[in-house]
Image (cartoon, rainbow, N blue to C red; front, top):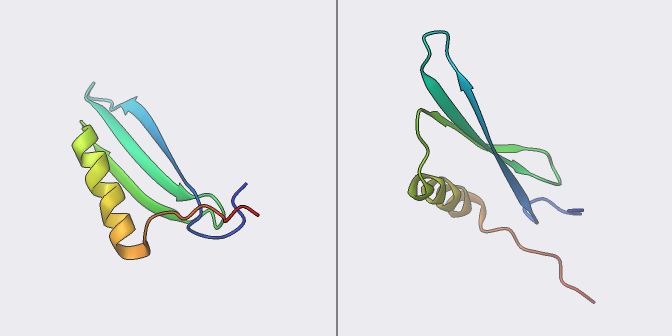
Length: 71
């Protein structure tokens, strides 16, 4: 378990279909300790490059997740 904010992030993809039949995907990224939603990206396609850009944008604002120091 994360014991401090920005220690670990979780991400998840969800997909669904609109009434028109068009499919979409959403990417959610959450801070595991604070349960803060760091990003939600929704589009018909989410490439690996786009996921990387979203993660880098979050890290630019908050810094990359830092695991706890083991003793």
